[in-house]
Amino acid sequence: MSEIIAMSVLGGLIVFVLCAFPGNDSVAAGMDMAPQFGMVVLEHIGWGFGVYVPILLSFYAIVIGGQLVADSTTAASTRRMFGFAAEAMAGALVPALVLIVAACVADPMQVGSLFVIVPVSAVVFFLAIQLGGFIVFERSLRLSAAERARDWAKEHLGALKPRSRKPIWFVVVAHAVVGGAGGLGITLLLDRPSGSLLMLFLLYGSVALGLGLASVNGLFTYRTTQDRLYTVTAWIICSTLYLVGLLLALEAFVRIGPAAGLGVLSSVVLSLISTFWPRHRASRFVLDWSLHGAATRYAARSITTRYVRNVRVIRELVQSPEPDQPISLQDRIMVVFRPVRGDTSAPHGDSCTCRRTFDRSHGHCDAHTFESEDINSGSAV
Image (cartoon, rainbow, N blue to C red; front, top):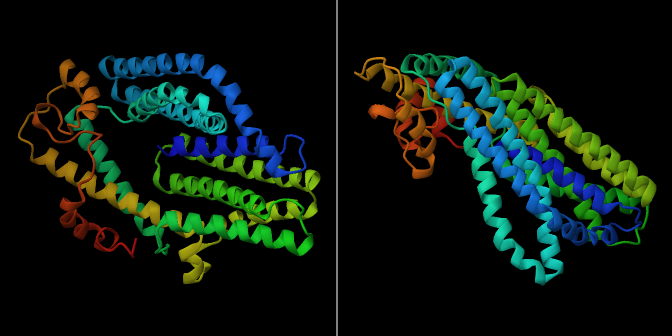
């Protein structure tokens, strides 16, 4: 899911740059071209969906086939690779959908197209999210994987202190507001812009918001994933967004003026400082409101939940009286449709599958054996 968000932010920021500065001196005039871009997208979205859906279904077939005939290592690698590709494809589709909505707002006659586009888009996102979420191995392999995940979580949680005490969404929104206000303040100090102050504030705030989300995603992925591919990809996307931010600052410097360029640059610099400021040298105020502190808090909650979930999985597998039998073909196929039916039980009554979610109401006893403050105290995490 984080890959979809990251790709959406990257694509959205690129579209914003293309709309804002297509040779116009006014940001507002440039943004007026978004509906025109949306009309062009409407002409091509049909064949785009015609390509997306068959590809995602073929990914499903490959992943299911890998679980049926390949060994566990190959099946897991295949699922990760195609799951990541599917989520990246879905995220790349978001900017096109935003432009279509802009076209429909400008021309109400096009609203009817949404009755086709929205359901098909929902299918694409459903397939992409579910694709990376199911994989079933034999009982001994699941037990070994759960033990490794538990030990990894226990080892890494201690490194995530100190951290923010504020909700991550609140920190990101505040970061965007401060970035917008700071950029606007610098612009007003250096020059008196002829355009709309609100549009400039939205421009600076959008840059800060996009970079903030990318930074949080990169930090969170770095702290929580055991897969090098996801870590490298998250930082590549984050670095690309910062490069886009610098190019946007240069474009604003040339097209609008030095004051606007420095305003955009201030949002980029603010995001960099908030992302990389050392947590151990930060005051409590900075720690609570920095992107680094907020992402660390988010990562700590995720790792703690992962630990509790894997402890429960290990307990249930150890206490299960059933022998270590290979999973049947029927059970492997049925696990694909289990998320659709909302059934989280595993084959043969075993309640442990890799898609099983953590029930917080049953997590308190395991949390006390690990680190109770991370589960039971919202302010601590």
